Image 1: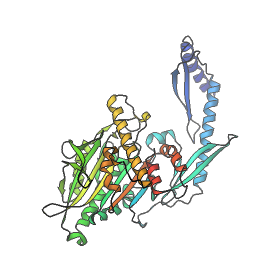
Image 2 (image 1 turned 30 degrees about the vertical axis):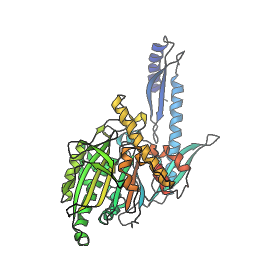
Image 3 (image 1 turned 90 degrees about the vertical axis):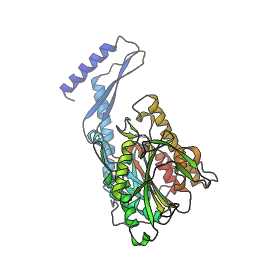
Length: 444
């Protein structure tokens, strides 16, 4: 540590300690953290807390804390890099064959954002190949020796941070398109922490606050629907396509294509949930669908959290419906593309106003209800609690029915992976059950 830095710390600490030395109920502490892969050390503070006597901090002691923190993180960083060097990386490609499945669970790793890159955060997740995901959990032995617990988990498909929306679409929503032409109900929904990339994948790339709707799964699915619609194999079915777009906000349903009109989700005599009064727009091309996506997305409820400056505060449903051209316009098939609101912890909410807290509570309550439904399905329970929330009522036909097909795409940051390890540890480390995979994705 050079003399200039010592002088700087000494001067700063003297000023702080002298000011608060007369106040017997305050003390000053610093939160210190190091940058992995770098010798730089930062201080966040000062932080004030109630104490009977003030704490005097020496600059030499502060520097030792900095240095030790830097060495600890640097060691784990090097251990992860060494482990990655032993992996055979075979990421998914467009030439891979796709196996049809009734329920498919995928995971997409979020790339580091600018803030994380600037802080040189440690990446604790590796995606070595199809379906595999490795979580590097830093640990200490009894003698304080550092080591990594490299835990491997398997999904149907896993995507690393370099995967494009087109690649994700090919393995998630694209295999579901044909099923709606065969009279099925298909659902692809995106789940993850706020700011993890769900809306980017479903709705399209962002340039600032402007979104290119032609690059998202919504638009890619629409293009394939019309490709099938014009194919000679399905021409004799005499089908027409319609699109609807609605959101569930605070447990209530709003039509995004009709001035956010308030709607109701009710069960009919066949125990199928219908959104009463929902506007369906007749469309003849993918371009018309994209226009509807842009209109609806501009009306969707959003807000600010500490994790995301433009966080979606509602569950958005884009539905592409096929109807027969008869007098009754009979429903033939339906494809629901769902962008779930971001799961949030209390620390993610930057505002303490009542409306924001109510939003957060309702989002988490509805996602908890979804998790409970999946848990009951996994146990083959006689009763599935779909009526716990509006979200689960609307998603009922995604899980019930012989012709239903569902794909869940989970979006997680490195912190989410570490916080979700508990549920993974209660399952097989290699081939844990389908519903345990779903529950793990809903855990964080």
